[in-house]
Image (tube, rainbow, N blue to C red; front, top):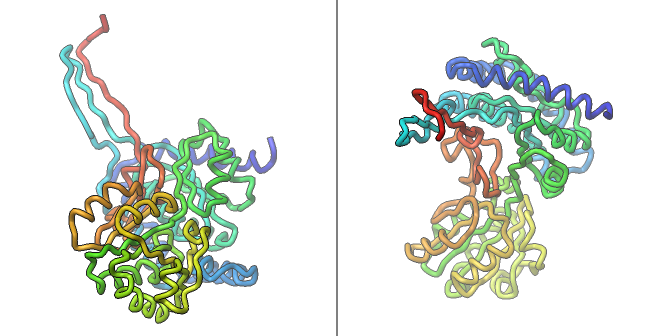
Length: 419
């Protein structure tokens, strides 16, 4: 066994042992731990922001993109958001122990299906340090332990946040190993975690295509993917054009580095000449580069030509693709051929068309007259999220508390034996 694999294995075994303790802890204990952790994040704000400043300086020195730096950066407002999200999770209903079904058999057996924690959840993520607390909070509230591997660009910040979370665990007597952050970012740690069948119960990777592929190809334990966000907004001929403009600018420009930001706008041929000049001006005002089809370029004069690769690219910055389509059928075809099944929206006043779009688009989240930026655990009322799954098994869309549980069947008899 290599030295790195041994270190990862030892840390994971300690976290697995802690998972047993957490799973048996009362709702009150786990809730109080989260409240104490949020309090510690606020109390440690200066140290956390100082650690973040080190990471930002290193990221800029390495020439990371503006989008990557934005994902990494914390300020007082964002840090307060992290603490508040932790408190939000604390106050959510506890899913552990919930009976989802119950029935009696003709032979007198009474069967219930009850929610239980998954066990030890490994989460591998890049850039966003808020994931450290969000993931820890959701795992703890749902009775799980977690082992986290963040990106090298956020190591100082992640260590500081994990230390604050440990304060919350200590405050209620829970083992600090219940939230274990790998203190190193070696690439070999990813396949090492994925090899720990029987110790790690599930892996959730959050990051770019390279990270996702590395985890999926190497893992021997189940994986729930947080895949790329190639999100679309389709403006139908019956759209309220002012509403459409507001939604599109929000979906692209509010935080373009987010996975739920729009990357492509599809505009109905019938309204293109009327709508695109105003939309192009709005993008210019928001310093956003437009890459368009030939027809878009005729209407928006400073638009660059969109390549075939652009339609399949998660730009994660102030770049937007625009394509004029003949109608709903072409819009659906384009999304299904080029999208990532993350989040896609239609803007229209025609309910029949909207319902058809919602039914045909095979994405984790589909919207009618709303921004794709709402694909988020907090916005869905989950308090936070472990990731946004684009898979189909077990969990899809923002993963909150319920998605971090499995179930077992409890069967109660009065002496029955099978004949």
